[in-house]
Length: 262
Ligand code: ATR
Image 1 (cartoon, protein in one colour):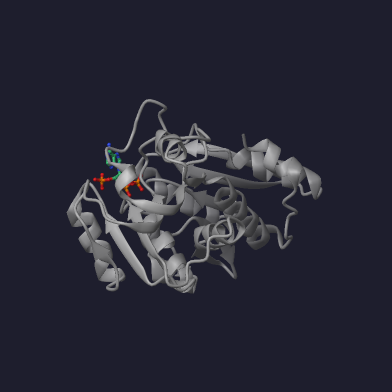
Image 2 (cartoon, helix red, strand yellow; image 1 turned 90 degrees about the horizontal axis):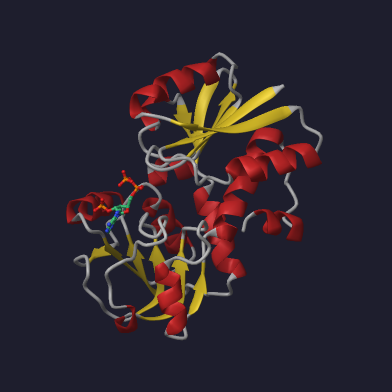
């Protein structure tokens, strides 16, 4: 029996076990996928368990996507370019970090029929997943990326990785085609981003949060008559790519899978 884990803090909200265990059962794999709430100083132990084959694969969620990097033996190109790891596996005695968030977000944007070419995007938040969104949008040919984070210094340090990004102050507005919330604001139902959404324009308002399915950010955008999308597809497709890495099976994404994630 193989063991898989998602690590993060908090982790209660994660639906990764539900999705992975569904596919594990469907494809008759002898494995179990669990969630584990960690403190930063527990990361070394998890990686050493992976090295000793006590664990066979790890998904990493907030706030550890960058923190796991020093413990790894190698990284995929995308993980290196984004400095962000969400999937870990062992290959030829080496512990490797990969990033499937870029694939997940790219697929979600394609499915939403938003065409990034010659468009302008505002990314809210400069936390662990933000580099994946910047990298994916740039690869899809977006013409401008503007980043806004409550703590400006974190946006500035991301600019070192992505010099083409422009930074605006938190709370500042302008017209954009795509607005992506990568912050954790909205995971708790009563939270909301203090921003005048009516000033932002927007063909598409995208929230990476999928649980709850409608954050206040999306509710407000919808009221303004905007097209909105939550992070469900990104979540499903990042998981599908991780599943492929671990089990070498491209799991089917069908209505049954979509119904799991409510
Ligand atoms: P980390 O910042 O450790 O990488 P994260 O969960 O990946 O953790 O990122 C959280 C993101 O949500 C950050 O962009 C954070 O902004 P700060 O860098 O200023 O902390 C943002 N965030 C969290 N709570 C917020 C709030 N109440 N208002 C605005 N932004 C918030």
